[in-house]
Length: 596
Image (cartoon, rainbow, N blue to C red; front, side, top):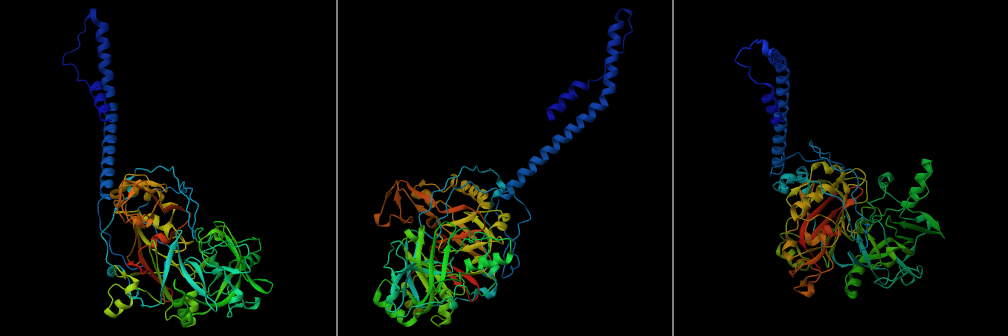
């Protein structure tokens, strides 16, 4: 623009001739032509000057905009401190977007993952989505704020310690506990699932077509303490809060969290609500038995009838488990399965153990029967297993010598436990409020929080889900941050890394309300697959913390294709003790070494 203006000025603003015009009869035509040219130049000069000034002004304005944009982009990538804000309300369902809005793509990410939640065997993901090179997607991570600066004082009360600690073992991507049922006790291996409200497993001889699982089937007739509930005493139809809170579309994002199909829609609202209640809290009567028809959005299902019998957790050793059962077991209502379909038929575990905040869950029943002194429990997970603690936490950060000796086999906290309140009332699953998400040192835009903390689901802590799932609204900034850090495009396919490259992968951090830092390390979210490098120690082939030579193949098990909200699965809970305090409606998080 500047060159064009200069050209116009040079060609159309010539100085007038200092010599007067000669009126010669022999050169009249030439002089007349020269005079006409001078006249046209004089009349055109004001108009050309206005055009020139306009073009120069536009050029200067355009350059100013370019410099402003460059300075703003540079300042956005520099570290900055986060101002301290007043505490949020104890119960929060959504967080508004920041003042600055970002251009996020509202279309769903092009992932093809089939969500395999409470069972193992995830499907490889592929994506062809391009990442926009936009500096506004990233911000430098601010300096951490200590919990005392962010947490309300009433949340910092220490959790009670308990000696009721029982082992978990990991298999096929899920964690399992041993439950002993009946008189005499029979052992069943059950998936520990904080996203489910029901406990169920096959019963012999009522399930002839059920799959073959790790334990012998529970023989109902061999237990002298069992009681088959009649239709006038069904337990699963009881509820202590409004039913409307349960009807949230596909349940917990299509995971294992008791999201049965709501069959039989009807224009009549009353009939539709009745149909929903029958399906969600089944009270159908079959042969004077309380029938249960449970369906999951990934296609699995099972049917059962309600049975009450004495239950308690135990160990690998039968003798010690029978002693514990005699001390603490209480009557509990569970589902005696008569059929299994889909993954429930082929899974390793015998059944499922629901630990959500439902009326008829284990923790509430054990508290009512005084088997535990506090309505809470904790899970400490690692690659090999971990432990479950009943009535409090099994670990402490700075134990007294007596406590240290008592909990010597249970590991310890590597940092003090931090607490955050449950985000939603009157729901049976555990939700938390996310205040920021970071990939390595980069904090993702605040505008994504409205999708992470949405009203329909929010962010859920679900031990029955193998992997971690994040709403597709976060896909663009998440993948852009990943590419900035690693130099590779993010996907859920096999990628190879040297030991040094693997150690440079970013930690994914969810900051929760109250300043809780929930970190997911590469050792937790990367799954070893298709090893092409030489393992230094063959005894730890699946341990990504052990050094290797050459390159190894890994698959990221953090998916950014969830329709709504976030599901923090069992891989996000690795190497932490997660404390579920139902009585005080709070969640505790502490880095830890687990007991088993």
